[in-house]
Length: 341
Ligand code: ISE
Image 1: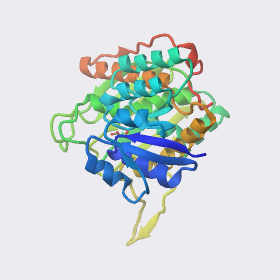
Image 2: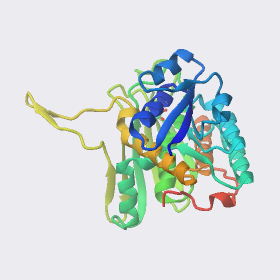
Image 3: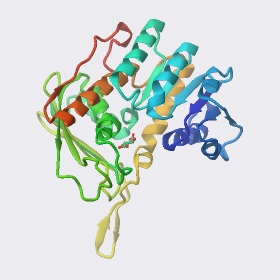
Image 4: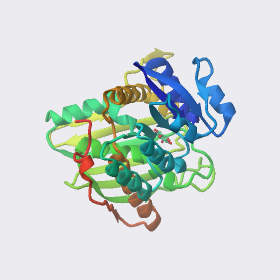
């Protein structure tokens, strides 16, 4: 039996999820979508078969023929929609960030804990990227002994004019925050943020790029250059430094072109092509989990913890001083730090 899915929000990521679910995920059937912009919803389902356009998000959540929901609408709507899914007892995959601030995520954690079973997954897709997975496996097998540092680069080609500087942390670096927690299986305790001289290519007053330096509970240092107007393309890389070697995540295998006395490989346009495999594997695992009655991938607790670190980062950016991460006690429902073990 296929898992019947409703997708709320058909912007960049929602439309991508609809297409991936409809064309590349086994045992999944998209039955309904909705978006504030009906035209955009129609465009997202064009050519994908019989998919209903619902009027309201609550219609998608309540529909009898919807077994599980993907929430890919505006970040500010996530809390209300995820809580509605919990009320309806339906599994939900919510795009990152789970909520814009930790308070909202904590309310989701509390509602799910009260329910006593995990239904919420958060779209931290890098946990499924073959490169990051290989680093985690190698680290576990002791390939470089104990980790000491994790150097990360996160560059987008362009951001919208006047993007709030905080979005570099809560919308972009939040992926490295999650990856660090998942890789090292411990919490991040302190964040410092440095601003460089702003790039002259930035349109508006975004402070871009930023450098985050985070510390984990055991003392691993994680630094992240976030640069969302890097112009030349989308570029995400990382190097983990251990006591006896390093592990790197670079571009996935790319064809090397040699011509006219030059050697080159392509640079990605955005996260959809860089992380296409990760998104597909994430959706496949989520669907398999729904069919098996199990929650898979990042939990609501992971969403909360990432939001709390991001909030500390935004505070560090605003004050220019290091900021401690405050986390409430972890409820029993989320006993392990991650569930990808
Ligand atoms: C975007 O919203 C994403 O989630 C991408 O994965 C990230 O790399 C990018 O920086 C964000 O703007």
